[in-house]
Image (cartoon, rainbow, N blue to C red; front, side, top):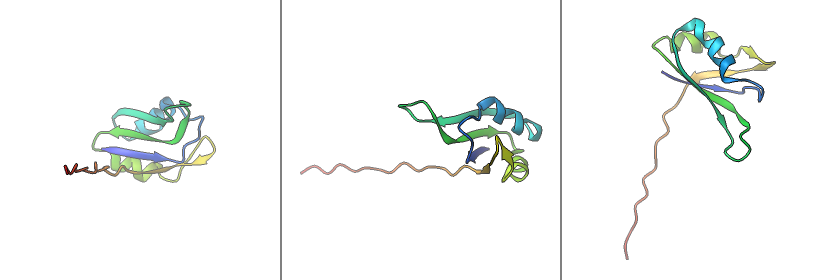
Length: 88
């Protein structure tokens, strides 16, 4: 299950996220999304978990991490838009 974690502090590390999600089940990966130019955190991350992701969402949504209340919910699938080239 892919989980969105929002409103994270810019000081939050992937290791901290791994640590708070681990009690709920196997954490397969953690990725803090960064700005490609400054390499600074954009304030959100994605955590990939096993089937226990629902428990993590229920247990961690609106909890405090680094003095900020984090938002935890199931990541929505981003659909790629099709671009159709029309030849004249």
